[in-house]
Amino acid sequence: MSDIKKVTVLGTGVLGSQIAYQSAYSGFAVTAYDISDEILDKARERFAGLAATYKAEVPGAADGKADEGLQRVSYSADLAEAVGDADIVIEAIPEVLSLKQETYEKLAALAPAKTIFATNSSTLLPSDMKDFTGRPDRFLALHFANRVWQFNTGEVMGTESTDPKVFDTVVEFAGEIGMVPIPIHKEKAGYVLNSLLVPFLNAALDLAAGGYAEPKDVDNVWRIGTGAPVGPFQIYDIVGLNTPYNILSHGGPEEQKLAAWLKENYLDKGKLGIASGEGFYNYGN
Image (cartoon, rainbow, N blue to C red):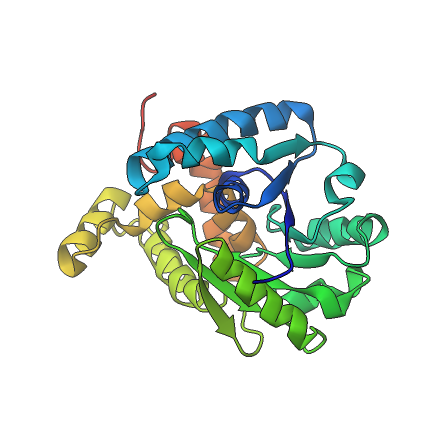
């Protein structure tokens, strides 16, 4: 068993909420942090929705375990309070490097020396952030896939500065919260999952943005041709369109063109994916 008992998750968006709830569901005391009480009120609704989903989809969750998980979550908009006694802080804030760097500078001054810092960044390298953490030996990446209770990989990736004992502790912790730990032996942008997934999604977006095919037809081809349960644009809607937009807007010229198309045709119209009720598909209520 790892020596991690208290978990703090920074960010209560789609994936941050899932990481926090899965940790609480697995028996850990969890603090969910976000920047305002208003956002945390929405997070409480999201956590309640996750509990209902677990009851419907996870064997044994309906026997009280899902509700017990909710009781292990506390909420805070005070960063010092949220991280004051944390054994691990898992950062799941937007994919903006400067924002992450600023956040780690604040964490370095507030968290106790024992605390491990783990970024859930989808595409940024942990080495881009390590010098801002104040503890590069206790910093690494712990990356989750969306719908963590179902697609339960935990990709663990350190830097050349990460203490091997810290790396092993986080691998063990990932297993304790129900993930299948995937140790990654050297830094790779996108880890394993997104090294495969991001080029696939970008290729689909290029087909739609270039006027070659409608998103629903691209999805149909993928589902029919491969037997996959969902197509790339359904995946976009599940993830939420802000995340791919942030990633694309920091890429090269071709990626930035896709980001601009996504912003003009979807983000600027409030079409952010399932969470907003509409993205590439309309989800009604």
